[in-house]
Image (cartoon, rainbow, N blue to C red):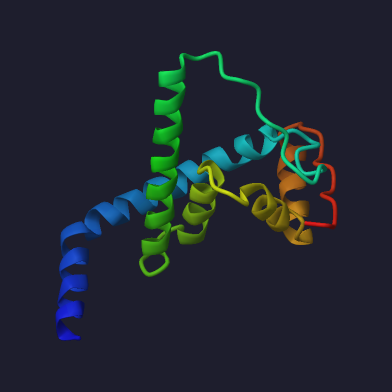
Length: 144
């Protein structure tokens, strides 16, 4: 047990400054990006039971694949950083949420619908959209 604590202590001693910098940076980026991201969601995004397929990319297939992999790696990094920030100062829950939002995985749309259907979250998101001049989101179907 002492060895585990020494490993954890060594990790935070070596990486603590970088975690603190990343946490502060994530906080600033999230404050700036959240209203913009929320305002770009189509107003009927959560209405249908299943997500509509996205239009095919006009990029070269290899570039599209590289971007997809990079996006998922960034999502994993945000998810792991968020988990670490749950135990250290920082925006842990927000980082976990952003990580989950940008990654691709089965059940993602259902999870998004379940989160947005909470009245407090739905009202807050629509309030942010109103401040940015975007139309309010349509209520998700209750079957999520």
